[in-house]
Amino acid sequence: MTTQKIGPGVFVAVAGASGVGKDALIAESRRHAGPDVSLPRRHITRAPGPGENHLPRSAREFRIASEAGHFAIEWNAHGLRYGIPVEIDDDIRGGRSVVVNVSRAVLGELAARYEHLVVVRVTVSEAVRASRLRTRGREDADDIARRLRRPDPARDYAVDAEIRNDGTIAEGAAALLRVIRTAPGRTSGSAAVSASVYGSGAVPAR
View 1: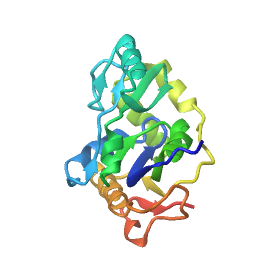
View 2 (view 1 turned 60 degrees about the horizontal axis):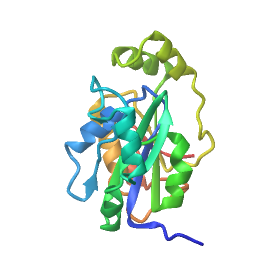
View 3 (view 1 turned 90 degrees about the vertical axis):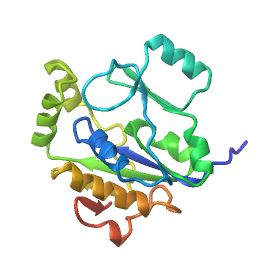
View 4 (view 1 turned 30 degrees about the vertical axis):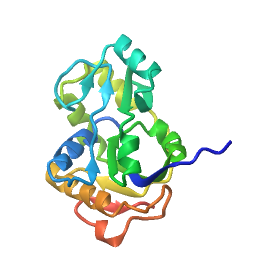
C-alpha cells in the first residue's frame, strides 16, 4: 500500500559531519526566520550543556516518548538517541518550512515521508572542524577522535545546496536563510538551488 507523503510544506534537512557548525547556523537563523519557518528543538538523550539548546531526555523518557509516537523521525548516533517532535508534520501540512539538523543516515527516510525535501550540506575544512569540536567542550579527546573518523553514512546522497561554513556565523546563517526562502516547491535530489542562493557561503550542489 502506498502512503501519501506529507506536504505541501518543505522539510529542510541540514546535514553534515560533527563540528561543521550546523547547530550554530540554525540558532542564528532562528533569530531572523519569519512565522512561516519552524525550527523545532530536538529531543536528545544528552544532559544540558554548551552548544545546541536541545530538550534533554533520559534513555527511559526517550523510549516512552518513542513508543507513544511522539517523534516524526528518530535515530541513534554517537551513543545517543535523537528525536524530532511529531508536531512538525502539522507544520508541513500547513505549508510551513521545517528546518532541522539531522543525521545523514535518515535522509532516505525523510524523502519517503515528506513531499518536499531540501537537503543542505554544511562543510568546513578539516582543520576548522577539529578546532570546533575541541572548542565546544562537549566531548573528550577520544570522542572527538571517533567523530573525526566517522564515515559519511550518506556519501552519495544528492543534496540541493552546500554551505561552506568557514566564515562567520552570520554569513553562514544568511546563506541558510536564502536556501530556506527558496525552498517551497522544491523536491529532494534537484540538481541545484536557485541562483539567488549562490554566494556568501552557499553554492549549488554538484
